[in-house]
Length: 71
Image (cartoon, rainbow, N blue to C red; front, side, top):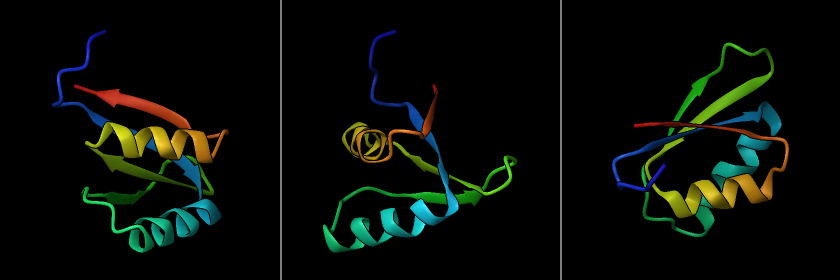
């Protein structure tokens, strides 16, 4: 799979990690849009972004998160 720049990264993280992540997003003034929604998996939140660098930051910061890439 090659990177086209139009992908949406869906990151499944635990509820308590979501508040930490959003605080970091605000503190670092990251220039990307986030969409936060409740996941079907109980106790989890889905963070959606189109920024590959931010998605990688989340993946590295929260090792247990699951990543889905929508084209």
